[in-house]
Image 1: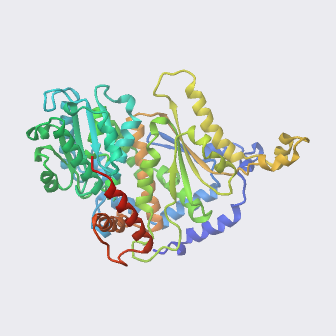
Image 2: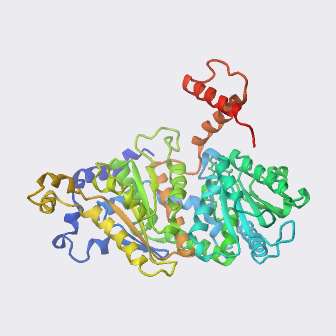
Image 3: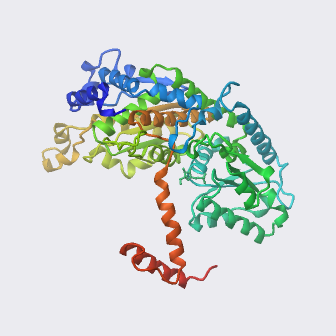
Length: 544
Ligand code: F6P
């Protein structure tokens, strides 16, 4: 498929020429916005979430073209193939069946394996939570350390943080991902070897960072008094590579399966979520799966014109491919969703940051935008200046949670007010005329600095409350959004060849850092100089 030749693509291009100057302020002006209002026409719900798309630079015609594009790009066929377990990841010859991990129908692919895996997780996490699983000295587990990186870290970390209000107060959960020893060292300061359970999560069980951290933690445990023979009480593995886990020294009965047909960044629904299940219990973990399943059902059954993942994907494509935006911001007005932007960075950019189409030809249109974000209201006091007055268009996903997870009076109305006010201000802007009135006759030169162009688009996603179910639906919404965009861009969202080259060169550089001599010309002059300088510094450091 060549995207640019699809009739809907050309129609969208022509439509863009017509409406790109349209100002949202005018669209929302009372006289232009009779019932049903923009808010009514462009707000849609599904799986317990509501999404207001009315502050986008769209009209009814745009939505019709979005739907037409989704049809012509065969989004529904791509979706159905994924759910059915077809090889939708051809470069790795794999299916992508993360949806099977939360399916409840017995006829769903791999139903028996999935449910046996969940039952083992539930049994194990119950024993850790109620104190039956003990460390080497017989004390119950109080600290759980998840060692993993990328998809083996970001999902469980984000969910554990988000659902902290549902977590057992008996157990603290830590996440160590970075090969920078500072990450592990700071966790070691907080944990007690007698009461620590380590979950080593790695699909391949060969990932440099994870294996380095896992070995260091094992050494630390032994140094702190854990007998080698009791290490099995402190280490479990989650992996698709059981042989490597056993080689590392984790007992086979302490290995939880990951499957080839689930990609790392889509895997939190599997045993990769073991730390989550230990924190919140299997019933709440079931709610997380149920929320994702709600979204799966919505994605598969809602008409394209009211389908949340499709609309999220299409608005993203609208700005990326037609308005030329380089990035998009995720602004959860929720401290609990602190790690959502980081999680989405991997989901969106590792999935769709590609240039080769499925047929091997190169794209001649932009694919994934830079995803970034920070919870509100913090971002308002840092980078929102640029969003309001910079010359760059950055579409935004605002996420508002109507009910707080805490009991502190007075905070929540302010939080929500700020969220809604920001999207309103970004949309409305302030004209020169208005600015001149504010600047007054005394300081007319100030007026241009008080102008806000407005017309800055955003989606506002609203959750009644942040709980396991709504969080599951929210995550699945973004997963499916990524699939829809991949279908339109005609790329494979399930591989990640772009991470390989740096890993290969990393090994070469590491060897050269330790070598007596590096052959001239082996690296470019910049890399050679950096290695030489670091080698000297490393030689001066005495290992502690
Ligand atoms: O290097 C990228 C990557 O392969 C991600 O796709 C993955 O989530 C992460 O590394 C961790 O991989 P693993 O689970 O095999 O350790």
